Length: 523
Image (cartoon, rainbow, N blue to C red; front, side, top):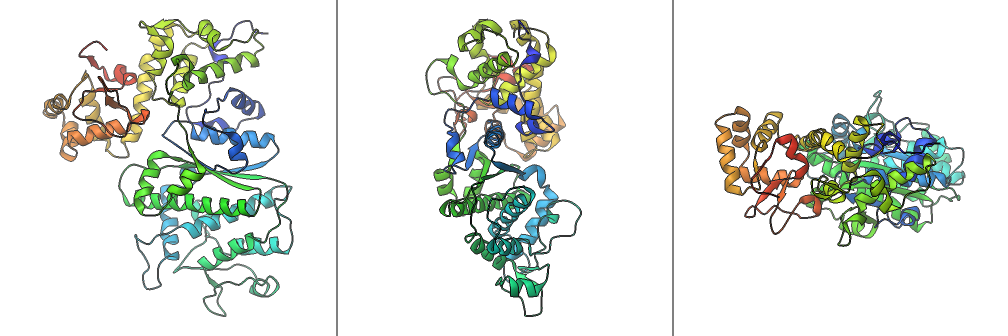
């Protein structure tokens, strides 16, 4: 029995929650559940009962972690589940092929390609129907009674001939040409025994209007008889690049119509008292992009969605939700290692942390080095674990020692977001402009630095040839690299939409070490 908890004993988790469940066993799942802090605005029963099925939030706020927590929680209640990852499961090449095929479902035969009229609701509804059928057949128990209506539904959903590729999304979806797909199986059984009414291209052909298959699937779905078994299908990683490429525009429409299809089937299942639930998570900036496409998705987001936030509205800083995540993880580790007595929240900080760091409270120090995201807390604790696994406290010396690595990793993550807008050479130019920048600064200061370094470096020249200084600052603000300071502090991760160029600005504190930021005045 341990008398003292070492840093390596704390189950911190992964910076990307999807990696929590790569080859894990029940013990890891139990640790994840026990150490997970449910966000204050989340009511688990709302997802269990289908009242909520959309989670929104900024990058790193824990959307995937929440979905994984829901999955494990439901599994413990003996419910079935499945995970679909939009970004990981579907490559850009897959989505481009899918987009090209699906576009023909919504246009006339005289026009083989269009960018305006692309509508993927039919294809996604069919895909979700097919997933229900596949999961039902893979499980030992059924979610619907296996009667004639179930047989007709399964045959309808699986009727289209799929792509013959060995991998990728084109293996999962049928080939659609001019709105038609080829039917597999005996037509006499489909037309006669099962009596499925498709919109056939002609009497002899096996070609059918794809929209008629989806319409039939929806109608046959209404005739099924549910069992008491529940199935939860999670769709995650509805993410976009931030550029304005053609693939970006297609991705916007793909995600938009996937959200619509999820809403349609959820509402249909709820009205029929079916135990089938589709739950998804989508980043806030994706929703902003979707809203500009002209299709109404605000109502389902408002009615059935919940925004994941970790900001604190007043109160004692010690009770901030991000700090409570640390409490929860340490208390969970103590419990797992039978350390007694268990610490309350206040004792956790007395036992494992110094009172102050750099003359401010440790709690305040930690919060000011995050972007108000659980991912930052995980990164900070993980680095400390890796460098000082046998220590029993997070000392002042440890925080001093890891500040460089934490700053470096934080910059690397934000640079990934910049790559969706800027080239590698341009990002190097941004880094050169920010390196040794005196903070706080105003807009004229920033323009002066840009021009001085433009004369020295070709990558800065390349950056400023393609982007104006004000536009660069607005993008840096949007991804959380800079914010407004002074009388009114503004950061995108605090929910402030726009940078105010007329006010003073600064690089966010966690990046100062990596970028060698200089003090202009004491902070």
